[in-house]
Structures are given as C-alpha cells and as structure tokens.
Amino acid sequence: MRLSKYFVPTLRENPSDAEVVSHKLMVRAGMIRKVAAGIYNYLPMGLRVIRKVENIIRKYMNEAGAIEILMPAVVPAELWKESGRWNVYGKELLRFKDRHDRDFCMGPTHEEVVTDIVRNEIKSYKDLPVNLYQIQTKFRDEVRPRFGLMRGREFIMKDAYSFDVDDEGAEKSYGLMRDAYCKIFESCGLKYKVVEADSGAIGGNFSHEFMVTAETGEDFVISCDSCDYAANVEKAPVIDNFEEDDEVEKPIEKIETKNQKTVEEVAKFLNVETKKVVKTMILKAGDEIVAVMIRGDHELNLAKIKNFLNAPFVEFATPEEIVKATNGPLGFSGPIGINVKIYADNAVKKLKNYVVGGNEKDIHLINVNHTRDFKVTAFSDFINAKPGDKCPKCGGTYVITKGIEVGHIFKLGTKYSKSMNATYLDKDGKQQYIVMGCYGIGVGRTAAAAIEQNHDEKGIIWPIQIAPFEVVIIPINTDDEDVVNLSETLYKKLLKKNVEVIIDDRNERAGVKFNDADLVGYPIRVNIGKKTLENGEVEIVIRKTGDKINCKKDDALSEILRIREELY
Ligand SMILES: O=C(C[C@@H]1CCCCN1)Cn1cnc2cc(Cl)c(F)cc2c1=O
Ligand SMILES: [Mg+2]
Image (cartoon, rainbow, N blue to C red; front, side, top):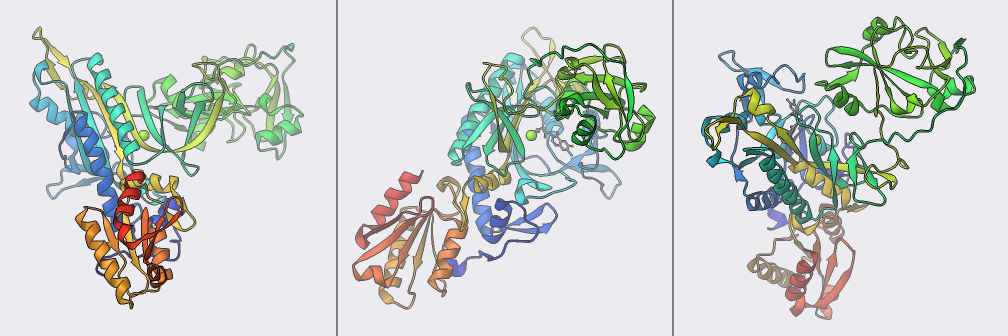
C-alpha cells in the first residue's frame, strides 16, 4: 500500500473527549472517528486491525469445531418475550417499532435468536453437540459510553453458543472454548489472565473472564500470590476468619453527631475505630427492599448480594424507598426499628458494641449489638476482597491488579432451552432440555486492550500479530533518485514475499513520516536515506524495543524477513 494513495488522517492532538490512552491513540492514529456517543467509524487502519482480530478468532473457533453463522442485528420482541427478558432490561435495550407498529430491538446479545434456530432444527441427540458462533454488530444503549471502543454502544462481538445433551457435554464444550480463547489471546500477542467471574443476569452461575492486564483496566482482579487462583473482585470470596471482639455488651446510647458525614468522621468524633462504625445499606433486590450491614472499613459487593438473594438484579434504593424502609433520611440508616429484612456481612457477626445510624438526621447509636438489639436474617460474605485477604484455595495472600475484560464465557444450563422449549429426543425417546453455554469476545475492545498494554509516549506499539501493516518503508529524501529507487525495489520485493508493507511515499519531511510511523505503531520501520546509502546501508528500526539495525542494502530483504519472524 502507498501512503500517498491511502487514507490515514493522523492527528497531533488528543481528542478532548478521550480519557484513556487507547481512545486517544486510536483517534490520533486515524483508526476511528466518532459519529455519535459510543458509535464509531472504523477507518482503514482501524478496520485492518479489527479484521485481523476477527480472523484470529475465526481460526481458533473453527479449530474448536464451532460453526460460523450470522444472525440479524434487528431482533423481533417476540423472542425476548418468550425468554422473559423483554421486560427485564431497561433503557440499555434499544427498542423500536417497524412500519407495522411491531416491536423490535437492536440485539445486545443473541441467546434468544440462536435458541430459536436450534429449537426449530435440532430434534435428536444425534444432532448434538453443536456450537454456533457469529462475529456481528451489537447495540447496548450504555448510559455513559466512554473510552472509545472499550465501552461503545455499537460494537463488534464474537458470540458463540454451545448446545449439549447434558451437563457433562456442556462441561466439555466449555473446556474447548476456554482453550480456544487462550489460543486466541495468545495469538493476538496479549498478556492475559483467566479469572473466575460473576455471571451477572445472564443465568447459570459459572463463568470465566479473560482479562488483559493493564493499569487502565476498569476491572479489579484478585489473584493469589501462592497458587493460580484468580477471580474478578465481584466473585472473589472473603474468608470468614475475622476475630471476635471480646468485650461485654454495654448499654445502647443515642449520640448527636452534628455535621459528621463519613465513616471516618463519625469514627473520629466518637473516638472508635472505623471498623466499629457499621454501615447499613438500603438496597432494592428485585422487587424487595432489604438492608445489608457491613463494617465501615469494608466495601459492599452487590454481585454477592444478588447471588445470595437469588435476585434478578440489586441496586441502591432511592431516597424515597430509604425513608419508607427506615423512617429516616439518607446517610443515617441503621438496623434498629426498620421494617425490612436485615442481612449482615460475616465480619459484623464478630463485632460487639458498635456504631450504627440512628435513622434520624445527625443521630448515631453506640454500643449496638445484633445479639440483643435487632434481628439479622442471615450472615454471609457481602464485601469486596482486599489485598492481604487469604486465598480460599491454598491459604496464600490475595493481591489486586487491574484488567480489561476482553472475553467472558458462561455455562448457561437450561435457562433458555426451558423458557423457549428447545428440546431433543434422547436415546430412550424422551424429550430433554438442551444444555447451553455462551461465549463472548469484544473485538474492538481486544484491539483497544492491545494498545492499553502496548504503547509509549510516541504512540501505539502493535503486537505484530494484529498490526495494521507489518513493515513501513520510509524514503527520507524523496528527491534523491537512489533513495526512491531502492525504496520502490524493496517495497516490491516485500510485497512478493506477502509481507504486509506500506511505503510512506508522501512528499513530507522525514520528521513527519517518523512521527506518524511511531504513532500508528508499525512493528518494523525501514529508513532509506542518502546518508546511510552512501555506505550502501539502510536502517531498520524495531518499534517495540527501539533497536536500530544498520544493514547492507542487499541484505535488507532477508534481514527484514528475519526480524519479522522473530516478532511473531
Ligand atoms: O451478553 C451477555 C452474556 C453473553 C456474553 C457473551 C455472548 C453471549 N451473551 C450478558 N448481557 C450483557 N449485557 C446485556 C445488555 C442488554 Cl441491553 C441485554 F438486553 C442483555 C444483556 C446480556 O445478556
Ligand atoms: Mg462480561
């Protein structure tokens, strides 16, 4: 490809709405342009990377025996009504009507559509197992799309769905997908971790996420410093090895705590440790309002509460709901005298004589004890794990890192086959529900994660596996015949060797060409200039290491091929 004939609108400045480096660099490198919030054009350089990621995904999905299909982006509401999800999702599900006033949505995921295919076409155990996948455009109307392709509203996803006769078969399918994902992310040149994850609202409660390790990741990964245990913080259990307060129960007292808002302020004002100030969170779990109590020095984990209560979703109650539940204002909720069920974290169970909100403005109660003053429906693990907590597998110590979720695989069980009646006739002629799994990869997010993990102050450092081009040739003095001739000859030789090469034949200063090459992030740069040509040499620069190799012009082709091989 010739840059003089191509379309790579690079920019010097960062776009003002870009907060993370991959968003900044994808725009500056001329890879994407925003059309609307969370909706992007893929320009040529961006599209080449996306297509490379897709083809790597296809290679290993096909190798694992999955079969590619393509389902519609526009999905009839009927299917989502059958699965019962039409009314579960809120504004994130983009709904609309067609000219006949019929309801549709832009598919955010395709469990319903693919289950409809299988229930119509698969009748016998002989037709199973089958794994169908697509690489297709999804739409999720995120309330705050940001970070470019990392959290878009329209995005390309590879989504696969496995169908088996039983759990054992589903386990096998899950294993095949997990192995395929490892090969996919390895082949994209990414460092990643497989972590146990929360399944969210999709169903089942067994899933793993593939996390690209990067400081700018939004997800927190808890891993053990002694064994291979790793989990999203939403999932990582906190062992109940809290020590018991050994003090006698003191009489409860009401204290005015004017203008003391935070746990720290209240603790300081009452001269107690923060762990003794117990927070009472009023939550909406499905259609029930509940109270959950945790120690002041701990963080609430909504996913653990959702799973414990088996609720479709859990969110913070509104101020009105809080007043209704506690007869007190926001910020002073406590367990005494409230008319909702109370759950408490395991750590609270070991406390004596602690502080709680008084369900009145600026009022706290001290010397409160759950053994005497109120009823706890159940104690369990409702908090986020922290570094230093103990590993449930080996007793080692938790450490915490940041990650970008690029893949998520789930065991679905029979949630969709039951609600949509997808069955097969088993060996004994009995109708059985099909057992499913589903497996997603964010294509754009994978490209963005690669940048988050591989960049420097000059720009992107593409892993060669997903680089838009492998080699860029830069003729420095475009007015010098020898420079131009050698550049063109080398360009043609590399093309003949099927090297993905681009030549920067623009009539631009060398500095502009070098800056663009480093910004766009080509793995190998070949500088051809008068100076080096005087001693018959060209300069090869490796973007990843910055190494500069001068080599005889006649050896340039073989040297480039050698370096290229090494980078894969
Ligand atoms: O999508 C999944 C699970 C897997 C992920 C891999 C590929 C197959 N699906 C979970 N999920 C996430 N966000 C959603 C957003 C909306 Cl608006 C919705 F209606 C449904 C979903 C939804 O179900
Ligand atoms: Mg996920």
